[in-house]
Every structure is written in structure tokens, then in C-alpha cells.
Image (cartoon, rainbow over all chains, first blue to last red):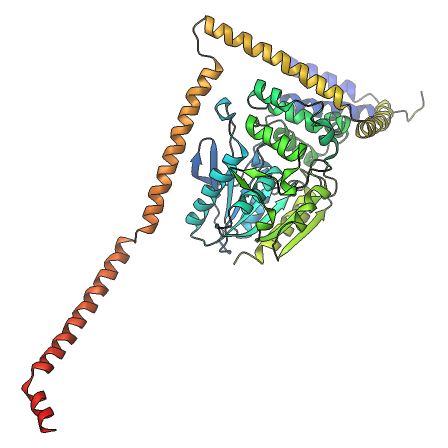
Length: 362
Length: 139
């Protein structure tokens, strides 16, 4: 009966002008995507867990491809959102690309913090978790050096880790849209100004900062474009299957945030955004001053021209501070997320990273 | 109505212009104070809810989220200690030689000792031999 009615209805639609028929088709597709479709599968590259501590997991990607390079690559993501943006879907995955080129790829996933993790500081991640993970990678791959790729805030903590651990054999460092200099942090600076933003009260009340709050802060950078823009684009391109697939994948990732451990958040906002201590050489992690000039590994530093979360000037600032002889900065025509997923990522980011690492991984 | 009139396209043009204008305005004059006040209000409400819930759970003799958090943090501490121990064991294992390699080294050492022993015996035999003394004496 229902099918019959739907058929009748569809027949009626065929009688209206073509532009309205198109609008109807788009509306139907948008409704399908937003209300009916199941969430897409993410993280397709096969992997195995090789180490866990608290909620943190260290994965090694499995491949039938023979390993071509001696130096394994460890990926470190931010404490915001989940790292599967680097392995979103088949044919649109940085991990898949690097694995297929013969790199031995590992990923450090922080997991979803609970209320018991509210006292976790950046010090704990930098001094306890990352060094242990690096040792596990070296042991598992039977390698004498490692490459590390840090994305967004993951790059910032990677740089601190590298500066504080000269005893570990870090050969290459790749930073993707990583902020280092917070002096001019644009709207974030205004939003997080000490005058109006009481970080202590927020951390004390919430314990861990909810992902919705962080997402809201990011969306406020361009409210109309970030809140309504994706849905207008979806309606506009609802008949484009590849666009709809990408939309679903990105929306899943964007809405799949994780809480930010309270103490780490307090440090991140106060020491970085409000006081800009890292680039000034004033940051102290577990009683040790962080000197970026201690970094001697080969460095590839990538920024995105249209990135409004970590704009190019915040990223490039690292280059004059480090002591590395082999260092390269590239400003790609991408945004904060499109550096890792999308057609530009596949055409520009992946080969740039792959080629650079290839020359330095044997 | 004009034949090519499309309501959606008209709305989209309007939306596009208006949203760009709005976003530009936000960029130029970010309402930091208003956002700060909103966060403050949110925090106040959350604080009140937290306190009320905590008191309620205490009243009905049920563990609160914080109580569960304390237990979880103890589990996390144990997990960290186990991980540290595992690492110590692994490091000590790494420093130990493989049994096969160790066996090979012992065998090599035995061979070296045997050959050294043979050489020493030869030297001793030669030293004690009367022919050597006689030969030296004749020279």
C-alpha cells in the first residue's frame, strides 16, 4: 500500500517543472543521508595492536607489501578528535598510501579519556607515553632509528618530545598543519583571551572538556560557513555520489570528537595560546625547559594556505628555531582537514610526504 | 512568475552573500566578551547540576561519577605499573643474549681453551725435553 502511494507520489512529481523535480530529488537524497543512511566504515587499513597503556593504543599497520625502508614511521595525532582522519577510506587514506609505498607504519591512538584522566597533563603524554611508544616501535621493527609524523596538535607535542629526548634515535620529523607560534592566533586569541575566558573555572567544573565545546569553538571561527555551509553544499551537490560519500565520511569524523583531558587543556590554552611559551623557549615540561633548538632530526614542515586553525605563519615559525641541517617548509594549497583527506591530499600531501621520507628512510 | 525563476537559487545567492558578510563581521569584531559570558553561564549551570547530582547520589547511597572515577584512576595506576614492569622485563630480556647465541659463544670459548691448552702442553713438553737442553748445550 505504502509502495503504491509512493509510486503515485513520484508520478505526480514528474508532472512539475524540471528545476523543482531536481530540488525534490536533492531533498530526498539529503534526507536519506542525514536521517536514514548508516554511518560509513572508517579506518580500513588492517592493523594490529602492539602495545596499550591506559586508553592509549599503539597500532602497527599490516600489509602484504614487502617493507622497502629500514626506518619505521610513527604517526601521532592530536588530543582532539580521532586519528582515523589519516585512514578515512580506501583510496583516501594517508596510511594506506604510505603502507602501499613500503613504509612500516605505526599509529599512536590516545583513546577516549574518562573522568579518571582529568589530571593527565601534556607532560605525561610527552614524557611517559611517546618515549615508550617509540621504543616499542624500534623493538618491533628491529630498527635503529624512527621517523615521526605529527598532525595538528600532535605535531606540537612531537616537537616538544623530540626536543626533550635527544637520546632517542629520531631520524625524520614530519609536521602537518602544526601550530608552533601562538603570538598571532587570530580569533582563537580573541576567544581565549584571559580577560574573558576563565580556564580554571572551566576545567574545575567540567574535569574533561566536552568535545562539543571544542567543536563549537572551532566553528565560531567562521560560524555561517562552518555550521550551515556543509549542509548547503550537500543540498547543492546531493546528486554527486562521490561528494555525498566524502560528506558522510567527514561529518562522521567531525561529530566523533573526544573529551580533552582537563589538565592538558589548561596547559594547552594557558601555556600555548595565552602565554606562547613554546616558541619563546619558556615552556617547562616535567621540570625541563623545552628548547626547540635541540631538534636536529631532518624536518618536513607542511602548512595549509587556507587553514584557519593553524595558519601558515604559526606553522612556519618553527623553521628558524630548530638546529636541523636538513629542513624543508612547504605551504600547500589545502585547509586543516583537506591536508589529510580529499583529492588535494591524494594529489599533493601524500606524494610530498612519501617522496621526502623515501629519500631519508634507509 | 518568470519562466526561469528558481526560488532555491535566489535563496542560495542571498544566503551566500549574507553568510560571507556575517563571517567577515565576526572576523573583524569577534564578540569575545559575549562568548566569554556564554561560557561562564554554561559553567555555572554545569556546576549547579554537578553539585545537585553529587548530593542526590550521596543521599540515595549510590556511587557518583567521581567515586567511579577514583576507582578507575586506581586501575589506571595499576595498569601503568604493570606496563612499567613489562618494560623492565623486556629491557632485561633484550640485554640478555639469546640461548643459541650464548651456546655458540660457550662452544667457541671451549674450542679456544682447548687449543690454548694444547699449545701450553706443547710448550711445556718442549721445555722439559732433554733434547732441547742438549741442543742448546752443544751450541
